[in-house]
Length: 114
Image (cartoon, rainbow, N blue to C red):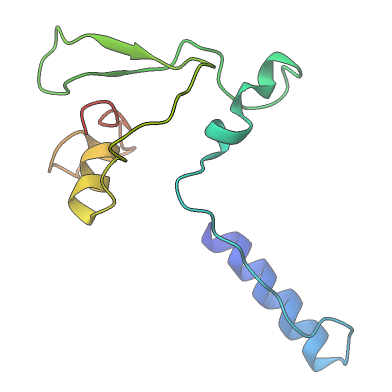
């Protein structure tokens, strides 16, 4: 969840709490491994105004090999086993494609090689 959204919840909660409003508790649900694109990204086909995916997105099989095979995003996802790594190192490799975290914005190109 972005810092902005959290801040808005914080302000709303404190505003109602201080003024005797009906909100007593705010619950934030964080779902692991479920990105927007994973759940709703292909809805762009239904409504082009949605900032989703269109099937041209891809990741290289290896970020260190410029001739590496490209794996394209498709609406044919299957269960992946073993599950991609959840360690700090594995997530860094998925986002940056290597240990070099200086790219801004991150290339988001290491998911296929993990």
